[in-house]
Every structure is written in structure tokens, then in C-alpha cells.
Amino acid sequence: MLTYVYFGTNDLQRAIAFYQAALAPLGMSRCITGDPEWDRVSAGWGTYEGDGAHELAFWIGTPFDQRPATVGNGSMVAFKAPSWKAVDEFYAAALALGGVCDGPPGLRLHYAPDFYAAYVRDPDGNKVAAVCRGLRSHRQGSPPP
Image (cartoon, rainbow, N blue to C red; front, side, top):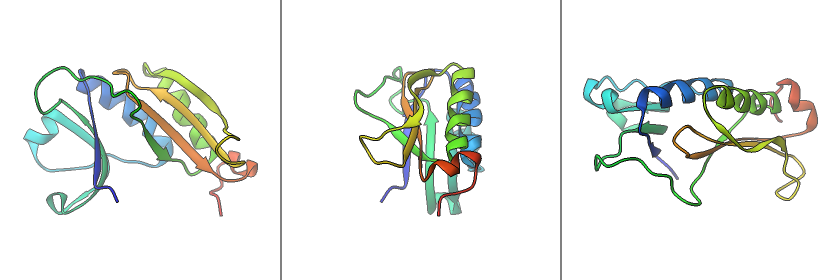
């Protein structure tokens, strides 16, 4: 369904540090584009292969129109977490690097009995979440069935 998601940032280096730490517990690694011009204005996590012919990635970078990045009201990206522990680690890393709590780790019973999530705002104000669907025993790191 998706090829990529792109959030604007006003401080690329700060955003890279934030997402590198926050996405590591979710098993997401940096995309390598091999294009120095692109890498100068953006950074991505996920899959980027064959000059983007095969891509499923989350990107942050300078807005294409060169105006300041702004936050979309109602916009959010939710990343899949392999465990409740990974959700907790995502949240802790995000707050340690300038993120703001928008919902601490915990079950969201109004969504489903196994919907464990944490919500944060990145340093630019973009809303991101980590979500694990699974039983309580998955808090220790074993993946859901």
C-alpha cells in the first residue's frame, strides 16, 4: 500500500539522532541511497534498494519547497514493534533525545485487548508511535505469534 512516508524537519542532524535512537529498538536501520545530494537533505529507515525501485521507508528531511517544516494536525506514523519491551525502549529513547510524551507505553483497550503502544512528538512536533499487538508475555521481548 505504501512506498514511503516523509516528515519535514528544521534540524536534520537533530532529527537523525532522534530517529536513530528511537527506531533502533524496533529493528529499523538506516537506508543507504548512495546519493550524496539526497543524503545531504534527508535520512531514511527501512528498505531502499535499486535506486528506490524497491522501497518501503520512513524519511525525514528538509521540506522540498524550502519553507520551514510544520506539523500536520491529525498526522501520525505508527511503527510496528516486535514486543512490549521494544515499545518501552522506543519511548525511553525518544524522550531522552528531545521527544515529548503524547501517550506513555501501555495497553489501549479502547482499540483492542492486546494493543500496546506509546505515542511521542519528535523534536519538530511530528507525532509518531510504536505499536505491538500481542499478549502480556510479549513484554519480555518474545515476538507475538
